[in-house]
Image (cartoon, rainbow, N blue to C red; front, top):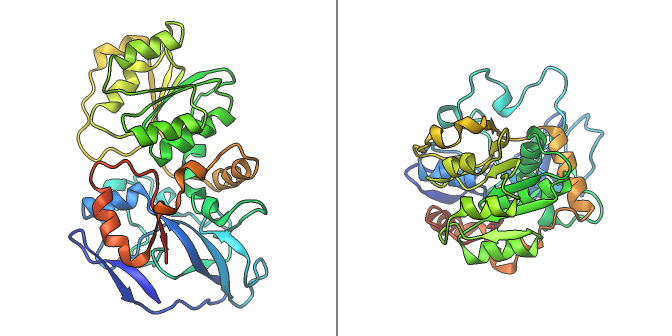
Length: 339
């Protein structure tokens, strides 16, 4: 089968690799779509993925082979590539190590082939079924939606709160929708790129601000009756946005750090410390977040359509060009590989 193998030094090579075969308690998934995640772009940009890695964890497909003793699946079942409940005693991903550090330990499953490939081998418990009425295209973005569900569930968001989402890339656009579904009644989005700002408007943001024009703190304060938002979701990871998020939050409010900044990020505590603003980090997902994500998509409370147009899909052979484009400042909403 074909797979995009990371060779090191910001180079991906589409090569023939052995097609996996299902052992006892395993299934092989034929990948239909795999979205390009920002964390994979970071692994490429900062050269932290080990050579030989096949990345790609935002994907959907169909069961192509069922191993011995597998009773949960049959060939042809539509699934998303993750989100299942592990058996008792099995810890996965970032939950394994009590001092997990994403910058230095970001690829604990070194050697496992993921979904920038035609097929993926999974344990029987790992995939999650795609509900009827949820398209394959939308299902491919279940994982990033689950990331925002996890962030919202970790937040102190209450019914009727005002929230600000900094950044209207894929995570920001999904976060504004999951926050709305959780009870936020005023959603303000900050985004300088016109295409992304327009997508935020289409998805129901009450106000979309351009942070490069005017004083965003003054404008947000006006829009929240002089108080500020109860919760700010930092989904941009630009150099000034963490400090900006802390400055925006209301007294006793909260900043939820969703995006990952890979460069030193300056903050000036005297500006916001006296308001006793709290910072909550959010990372990854839990199985219940995937379930909730699919339920929100199925119910129409999360709309993927503005993130996915025909121009967002590319063949596996174009993946090097796609990654090179994504490491630069981008107005792309989402890029999806079709192996």
